[in-house]
Length: 459
Image (tube, rainbow, N blue to C red; front, side, top):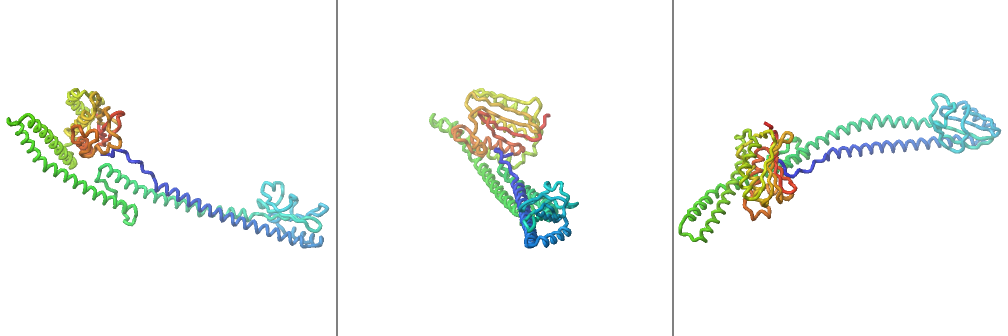
């Protein structure tokens, strides 16, 4: 028998946490690489600027023009234009340079790849240059240093990132999600066992997870120990309930017999005879209550499963409706039957399934006002057979639907009506015996009680 109120869905918390941790790991690694690259790049840029400044300072320190030109001529001959560009522009516009042409720039700036179009620097020239110029005796000197070290640095960091970070990320992701999925499976197993226990299946247990040092495995063991203790307590309580009902049933029946003998006597006055009659009615109600308690205890033992056979719920429901049609007419209720054309065959005990229909019809007759409609339905839904008894009476509040399945529980408005509060408890026990899901829902208005028999057939 399933939980009447659906439990909230279990969210994949371990998987989400694994994803978050992997994301944090990735961001941290990328931030570390990015920071290291930025620091080294800035330092290389500063070193390059210092080299240009020192070279320009050496030229500006030469006071004589002829000495400066000799020095520049030597340097121009020795310098590789792919790495270092030297341009000395005399005051009359003539030049000493190691390149045919180069932009005349002022100050210090970076000359990037797009700005080098049309300038012949030789094959394998740097993609960008740091350029700086200064006035010297007899003209102006421009120096340009290739920034190939920074480009190489970018390639090195990209290679290191590809070689180290990507495999590490793949490994971390694989291990992280494997561990998360393993934890998720364990959490789902624990959640599933707790959900079944909440639904009343105290035999449910968390599967063996192994690894006593694992936190989730220890939680699973604790849940199983709790379930075992709870099952033992409930079994003890059921046994006490059954023992009390069994021990008191016979004395109460004897009292009923004595009251019957007293009622048949001729010496009673009308007032005393009315008291005896009321006492007999109360005694009969007590006997019926004890019989219901014993019946529930017997059902929970599971022995009735040995008598299971194919039962056509459509024929059974139609027959039970005919039996209760006169009672419904006497109380002013409208009892109707809605059946699928195909037979609805389930494996079960015919008398117990008839008891379910009888209890549900009696419950509707007892707790709905005259003029209310009661519908007994049997239908097929996918691979299940549905047996429903619905009414348009006052219904049962949603927060009370679990409680009305408890033994001897009665709604406040029902305390003055007949009944022991065991009718729906007996239905729940029979449904559990047959492996059927019992659902109490709102009929808008009224109550609809439905049993879902899995694996039912149409013939």
